[in-house]
Length: 169
Image (tube, rainbow, N blue to C red; front, side):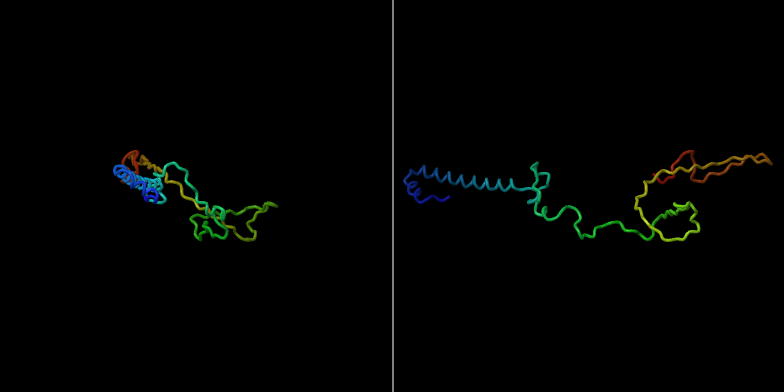
């Protein structure tokens, strides 16, 4: 810190202890000003201008960027092609919906003239897999000629009255 010229002459007239104290105070002021500057720069750091995570920003309300609010509305802009579903040439299932009778006169349409077909496609996710239970039944039949009891044989992998197929383990 520089002194005005008028004060320099008056300071030199002071006793040496006062001059030493003034110099000490000015050094301390310089140190404190540097510390304040450092703390202010730390205080101004946030997740946008430093490597700090957003969770350290605190609860202050964030200022929204207002640069483009007047020019464009939210969402797709006019002329943008967009991304939509398109029909595919080989669907997994085809369901036919033909009218059997005329909606005006009620006559059958079996001998009518085909004019055209309108196609619509539905894209859907299949339902989650469900457990399928297969019951194996082994019949026992007594021979009418000799009286022998004959039982059907279960497959090799069917060994108990209730079991899983082995694919769930």
